[in-house]
Image (cartoon, helix red, strand yellow):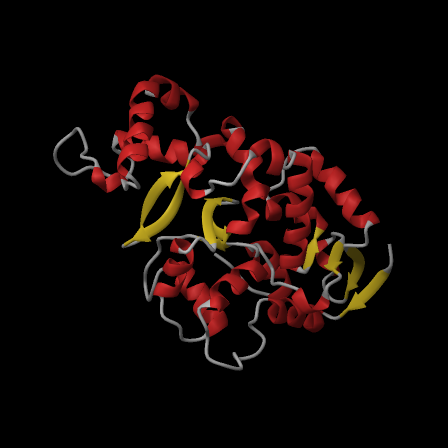
Length: 293
């Protein structure tokens, strides 16, 4: 593996240029820029934090400049984007459906995002919900009343909301749009009518290799010691994916001046014009000398 050398300043610039943050936008944003920007980042985390605007809209604003917020909603509604779990709930290109489908088919491995005991205990009600969607069309959790009257906290989800969340994680329903930021669900077979798991599906190994490559492209410069955390690829297959990428020349070793204190191997994604920014607070702290609390 070849060894290159970068200064800390050069590494910062590579990060920022890749994310579209190094220079001001050269033109006014267009609707198609929403999808292209998310493709460049690989995904866009969904967060309900709302001070100036909800987090996803601010992330896009920092890269595109002024744009109508409805463009993100319209991209989801038009089928350019989808929602699913990456490290957290994220928008990602619909074209990446094949990369996460293996997770949908093995929801038991998704940890807190899927409660098998609940899905088993309420199997009859869940089947009735699926039949309701099939007959009546897309639904929101708000379309169903909470069996207990009065105010309830976020920890007291109504049964239908828990049903829908479980079905979403298991890939039986998908989010087709958001109304006032509330998810609208429809059957996956209706959203993806041409999809066939046998014909179109990828093995976990194949999907993780492709996600690893996407993550490397979207991170650009990254520390191998933090690899598992950054890309959320925690299976032993990650080692296989890493070796395969190294053989194919997807990344190369770097020495980074004034970053030696981190004591980890630093890698650089080869496609210089696509290098994205740091993907985790620890990496940002090291690269930009920030104190993150």
